[in-house]
Amino acid sequence: MSQATASETPRRVHILGIAGSLRKGSLNRMLLRAAGEALPEGVTLEEFDLAGVPVFNQDAEDPLPESVARLKERIEAADAILIATPEYNYSAPGVLKNAIDWASRPQGGNSWQGKPVAVMGASMGLMGTSRAQYHLRQMFVFLDMYPVNKPEVMIASAHQKFDEEGRLTDAKAREMVGRLVASLAAWTRRLR
Image (tube, rainbow, N blue to C red):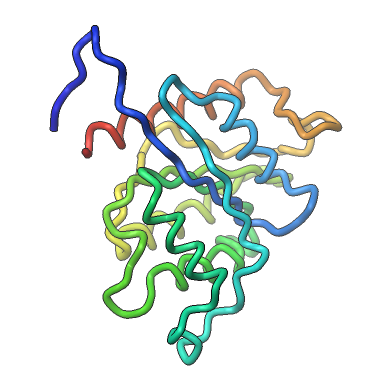
């Protein structure tokens, strides 16, 4: 792994952002947008919408549904993954787990393998998606992903921290999101 000298431009990092919610007014989609506004130099963020991904069915793997093939292609083209997750019933939402399952298939075709990943979440509750993030981190181990450990971004009472246009207005939360994206970029460069 080579380190950039002070005179070199940092290597570009392309992050694929995935919000684990299909809801139009999703706090986690807004959080992903806030991450896009906090990108360090040389880093880009592309959002992937999970709306078209069908419910996982192993019988439908050959050929893969077009939306699943597109998801796998975008994951494989990305240098790193950034997930913004809500928390449903103490865990990650079904739509996100469904996408994780599809992109780990078919057998031997795990698109997540070797990818640096960061997870963050926004919730109206007081726990700020901590349990959902813990479950996702357990999945990352099996998927052979490389998670960023800190900072942890778990935004509680998030409905009070975004304005009517969906902008993150809480200064501390914005700072944490910026630190997480910078950590993901640095971790990705370090792993290369």
